[in-house]
Amino acid sequence: MSQLINGLHHITALGGHPQTNVDFYSKTLGLRLVKKTINFDATDVYHLYYGDETGQPGTIMTFFPYPGIQRGRIGTGQVIITSFSIPNDSIDYWARRLEEHKVSFQSPSRRGDETVLPLEDPDGLLLELVAGENDQRKGWGGGEVPEEHAIRGFFGVTICVVNPKATQHLLTNTMEYSVVSDKPGRIRLQASNGSPGSIVDLACPPNAQRGLSGGGTIHHVAFSTDSDETQRQIREKLVDAGMQVTQVLDRQYFHSIYFREPGGVLFEVATNPPGFIKDEEVADLGTALKLPPWEEKNRKSIEQNLIPIR
Image (cartoon, rainbow, N blue to C red; front, side, top):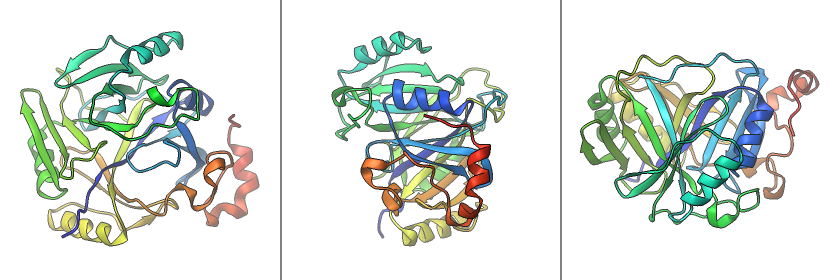
């Protein structure tokens, strides 16, 4: 049987003002804005996608930015930390850069074989920059961060759930993940192909409360699959495992299925094709507002209801 789950595909979060969001992720962090579209379920809200040069799976951070959104509470039943991969010798560069840009961050520390630099985005979303030696992906050097220090994509995510063993069981028995380490307070899993950007840590801060959705929280985490056929196969496995899985939804740049894992976190499985160059040339990615075909007739009113962003 072919590999059904490759690792992470994208992570979607809730943010505040869209211009603040663009400035932080495309300028301060140096990711490329690869697609500017709308929330298909709320057309007065952007859906912004950031990633490497072409938005390859495993690099894609996306946001629904709601101006004036109330802050959420990070806690159980959520992805609580998004970790990005950076080159092994780039920690000092990033510490200086974050300080210059007045970003809230903590001093780097060691976690196993990696050096970890925790930080927060303008809405309080918890992020990490993780420096290690095993990620050979090429970062995007076309922005404000030089290629030798650029973010390579995701390192992984940290999930906080009340019963981590139930989530572990789903990931290992159905979603082809393997346990890398099981230490007090942190279970680390990785896609069975060992690819970069596939780490899932199950860990909670002490006395964690139930998470509440809002600004600065993760909406869902998506896992990567190669094709519509592999997505069909993993959907069958998930249904057989007792998950309540949606039908396949067309998200224009990938096809998606959704379900809640045992701890309440919203999981998605997204296909790698067709990708973000479906409707824009590589050089033009993220420069125009792209709408799904069924909303083109409403373009004028949609554009009037969106806050202009640079």
